[in-house]
Length: 508
Image 1 (cartoon, rainbow, N blue to C red):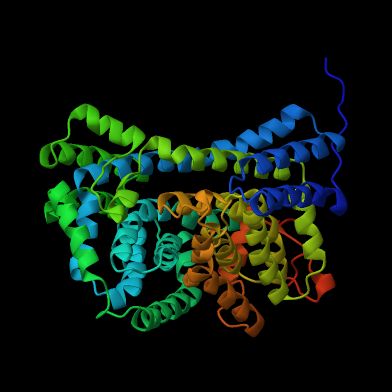
Image 2: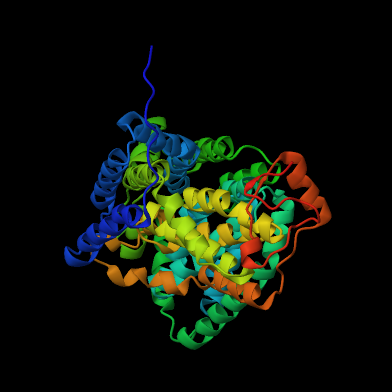
């Protein structure tokens, strides 16, 4: 016979902010004072602080632990993708797939159009694969080698790669985040994709124009060191058998993605075919292939650009990122379970007046969740759940919300170094930030397409452009599914449907 337990208290705004503020302080101490880019311990301390606040509020540790592991459990498919991408990088280098991409890129691409072409290529591949991380770790890695051959600064190439890879992921029906955003806001995935086009297309065109202009103004084709390019291509030919046939693993994965096969088996098929090609065409043994998949590829060509790019990959290379992802997710889960994030969001909502304010707040909350929790999935799921009743109460389509959380979540993730997306980009593209190459963080402002989209979305919210109201069919859908509608009459909004009682309760 169990005794009745007291329900945990909801935190006040000041109390809810304590774990967030203290975590940011410790994170800033680690990153900027100690000049040490390893955010794992600060986020772990943040999890501990959040747990202490939760216990003070009346939560039992098992309840907090359940919240932590629930969020981690939801993310395990993404961790599986990371593990598989690690294997792909090591095996595709050994098979000659990545070296072939680098070789033909150096031979075919013009230095002046390289940045623009890199963004377009990554967009196409990411759209086809439905994974920004997979695109960054494979095609993106090859493009980094091509950019080095053209003597283009690393951060410019990384900015173009990130712009393309994450924008392709954002509008791919195969992407997990593209499916997550409409799922948590109650819209369909294809309506969601169509509604993102008004921000996607202008942001991509502006970024494309900038990369093209920079290419022609920064890169002098006549002064490009073709001796350096020749040295790279010659070294690649000396150490690998180069052939278009070696693109088969990449084409296979793209084909499986286009036919809507599950992503993890599709990526693993690329590992298997890459391993077979490494044995058939590059003379690797079976045990060597296993080593490449686990520990990465290793080579000494005498050309520093090639060695720095191709000595990588393997499951073990992803462990730094995976450990960061798990800790960041645990921190986010603790914040959610203790009610701290909900209190902060509710405080924001009480200050909001009008649709432009709520749309800006939704984008800002997704970005803030990305900053604090370090997880793009939580930054989509939590604001999506929290803000949806407000949009319904205002009579606006929740397509506006799904676009807001996608852009504040998916697109901003790679621009935050301690976020799961940012940590992966830094690791997969060999930016060497942890080794002191802080200047390579310049890729963040140079990933134009990622941060332009939320800005354009906010402009639309204030002008009323591409900000659809709820249709009668959507309102009927809310009623049929019993969705919650927040009373927004105090803010000057009428009921979405005449005669519909305006209360913060499920529609009847």
